[in-house]
Amino acid sequence: MIEESSVTTPAAAGTTLLPPPVAPLPTGPLSLPLGLLRTARPRQWIKNVLVLAAPAAAGMLAAPGVPVRLAEAFGLFTCASASIYLINDAKDVAADRAHPTKRLRPVASGRVPVPLAYAAGLTLALAALGGAVVLCNPATALVIGAYLVMQLLYCTSLKHLPVVDLLVVASGFLLRAMTGGTAIGVPLSRWFLITAGFGALFMVAAKRYSERASLDGSGRTRPLLAAYSAEYLRFVWQLAAGVTMLSYCLWALGSPTDAPHTTTSMTLPWRQLSIIPFLVVLLRYAVFADRAESGAPEDVVLRDRPLQIAAVSWLLLYGLSVVAL
Image (cartoon, rainbow, N blue to C red; front, top):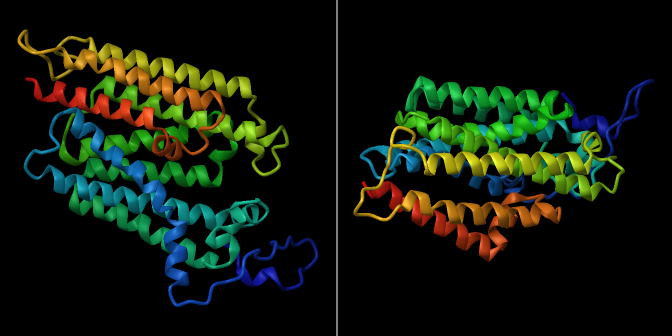
C-alpha cells in the first residue's frame, strides 16, 4: 500500500518517491465525500443499465417483482464497478500523477488518501457480493464475483497483456448484461451472449483505437497501447462489428426455437425490421471509430443525434417484436 506521507519525506537509497500532488487540497467539509464519489465514476454508472438487456429481450421488464429485482441488480453492480474504480485509482496513483489529465483525479491529487480509497473499494466489493447472495440468488452472486475477480486481476496484471486486456474489459459489459438475466431467472440464449459479447468487444477495440491514435506513437503514459498497431485495432473492431451484426441477423431471422418472440401472419415482422436501425447504430458508431473519436463511448452516444434516433427506433421495433405475440 502506498502511503501519502512518503511524498514529501526524503527517500532512502533505492526508494522511488511519488511525485507531489499537483492540485491544492480542498478544505471544505464535503471535500472527502465528494472526492470518493468522483473516484467512483458516477458518469460510468450508465453502463450498468445493461442489466436490463436480458429481461427486455425476454419481454419481462414489467412482470411482477421484476422491476424491484432489476433495481437491486443495478445497485449491486454499481457498487461492484465503483469498488474497482476506487481500488484501481489507489493502485495507479503514481502513474496517474505523471499523466496530464489523470493527475487531477481525487486520489492522485491527494484529496482522497490512498488507504481510504483501498478501504472504500474493498467495502463496496464485499457489499456487492454479500448483497447479491441476500437479495438475489447464487447465480447472480457468481456473476458479480466473476466480475470482481476479473477486474481486480485486470488492475494488477491483465491490463498489461495485449489482447487479454481487450477481452477482460469487454467481459465486464457482458457480465453486466448477464446479471439482469440471472437476477430474475431468465435463460440466456446463445445469440444474446454472442451479440452482447462481440458488441462490447467492438466498443472496447474502437476506444483503444482512438486512444492509440492520440498517442502519436509515444506510448509514454500507457505503454500497452504502443504494443498495438492502429491497423490491428482497426481489424479487431471491424471484425467484432461484423460478428455482432451477423449474430443479431441470425437471431432476428431465426426460427421460433432460436428466438422466443415470433410474429404471426397478422402482424408485421417487427423482429426482422429491427435489423435496419440496429445496422444504422453500428454504422453510425463506426463513423466515430474510424475517425478515432470514440475514446469515451458515453460521449459518442450522448452527443450524436442521428445515433440516438437510430437507437430509439431500434428499441421501438424491438419492443414491438416482444409484445407482438
